[in-house]
Amino acid sequence: MKLQRELIIDNFAGGGGASTGIELATGRRVDIAINHDPAAIAMHMVNHPLTRHFCESVWNVDPRKVTRGKPVALAWFSPDCKHFSKAKGGKPVDKDIRGLAWVAVRWAATVRPRVIILENVEEFKTWGPVADGRPIKGQSGRTFNSFINALRDHGYTVDFRELKACDYGAPTIRKRFFLIARCDGCQITWPKPTYGDPKSDAVRRGKLKPWRTAAEIIEWTLPCPSIFATSEEIFAQYGLRAVRPLADATLRRIARGLKKFVFENPEPFIVDFKFDNAPKRSKEPLGTITSVNGYGLVAPTLIQYHGEQSSREVRGQDLSRPLLTADGANRYGLVMAFMSKYYSGGHQGSGNALTEPLNTVTAIDHNALVTSHLTIFRNGYSRGGQNLTEPLNTITAANGHFGEIRTQLLKIHGEQYAISDIGLRMLTPRELFNAQGFPPDYAIETGPDGKPITKSAQVARCGNAVPPPFAEALVRANLPELCGTKLDWSEENAG
Image (cartoon, rainbow, N blue to C red; front, side, top):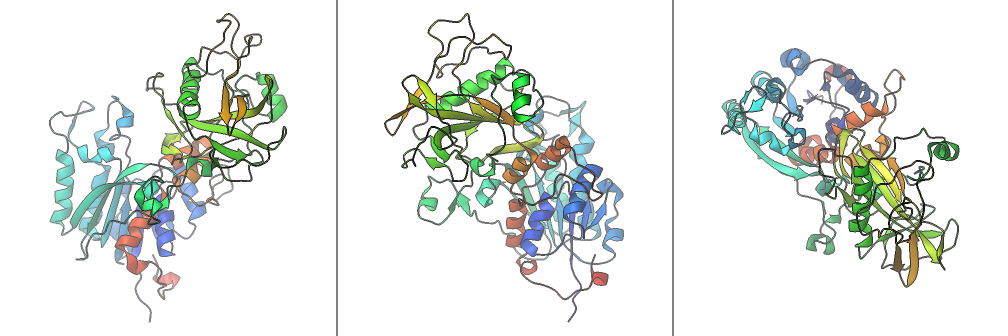
């Protein structure tokens, strides 16, 4: 028997995070995707070629016309969050962009989707009137309450809460607000977490899987040039373009991150320098250590390039936990402390370790990888050098600025190790997409016409995306009848 197929609509579709999660849950394509940004639609089209795409404002799309009279099972909405997010700081907000969420009420009034899901930042609940680009004090949440009441007036039951992506299998801690509204008489269901803190009783008892970590998403074979190397040396060794000299604030972040996550960390991580083994805690036995290409200790950390934050604050994490939130800018630098076996004052061999989930990925390229080795300091400072547990003094990349060498030694399983170098690179768009929970084969480099998508555009699509595990879990919980069932329908009967 042929059944009329209910449609699935993805408004504010972006690069396809929600669509991917929905398709992972249902095993079928999203019928309609809407987004005003050609770059976003290009990425969506190459990954979801059977979806009907509308590259225009959500307000210019008539729900009745695009659905052609067919019933709608799910309408997903991820309106622009920047004018709600606290990350915007004190900059003026745009009330029109803040008002984009009202389009969900339009769909409720016209085609009445059975289920509406809306995703945004947690500050969405503070949605209120704006005057002269500033939210009016004392009226926080007023517009939000009106929005909820409007959905209820159209016969919808509404509930909302905040969820963390790492609880559902994404290696990022990204926290988001979700609203579910439904008019079919069925109960709103919130998916139960399937992952948890490795230290929690639920994980220890096997009821939850441990959070996926930032270490999982790092491509360890990529070059990570030393921050002490000259531009000519970097180009000669790696064929990479020169990078700007690191700012003092960046160097301080590196030093403070190493202090907190390496030198004061009782359990650093160990990985095979060949990068073919998983990271492990230092309390686990080491394999054979050789002077070249064998085991070495790497204690990597991630630093963040959030310029508005004080440089005295440790902005980073160790890699044994999920990545912090990624936004539209790549704000993460990977710092790997390459540690060599210490032989009578010298050091040989090297290795790596990263053990936590990646921090939140943003839509701007702010993520970097640092391979660390804080042993070289400028001439002119104290003859005793500088202990690495203290803030790093200013270091420049100019020739002749490095003089005395002092080493920070660490003892692992009775063996002395010295930090031998510090390398830094930004995280790649692929690593950031991995952190958001996208499939590893998700196409991000070229559009449907074969034209390359710039790295900045890739990062923007990633940072603005809904982590697919969120959408998958929510759809499985609230539309189980669409999951795992193949209806008999033809393309003519499809959306």
